[in-house]
Length: 217
Image 1 (tube, rainbow, N blue to C red):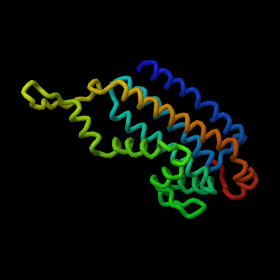
Image 2 (image 1 turned 120 degrees about the vertical axis):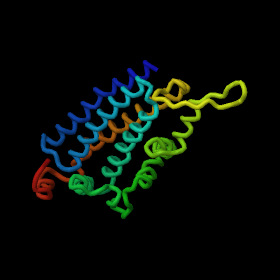
Image 3 (image 1 turned 90 degrees about the horizontal axis):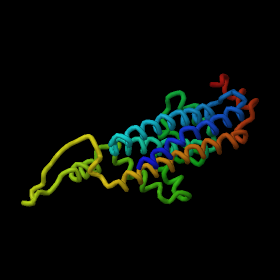
Image 4 (image 1 turned 90 degrees about the vertical axis):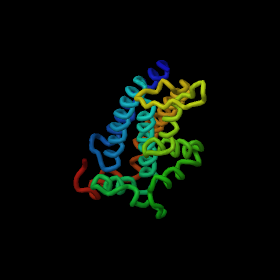
């Protein structure tokens, strides 16, 4: 598992390229969706470091919670970018409006479920990842399952219960799978930000954005 974790940490440096590309495309002047993109990169780096720290120290359960947060980066930023008005939605978010009450260009509310459906056609496994990862954010059967997996059956058939803060009772392949999924989601974050940097001009020239938004970020 050490090799997988080392490969994951190598992605930390990879955040610099899309960030620099976006900054160059903006010529240093960030408008709402540019700022949201930078915030996504910032959050992604923090989540990656936290996930690595947890999985290196027996923290599968909280690590799965951080995976759900990285998935949130993918779902929400993708939803904003393809909404038809990325800067407008990002501007409302910056002013405290929750994304799940906002709508895209065809009138669909940007709830988590709708964002998953939006991404699912090109990413068939995303719904299963969303469902499983959400089970670690909210108290659910996943946590009961981990508690029971930690227990043992003695020679008389009695179950010996225990609680703990490690993941040594788990199959190492489960940990490797979690790391692999987190790495995939991180690459998705980088890809979507890169896409935004490459295509942001189609959502307004510098002059148009300056006229629309009185102040850049």
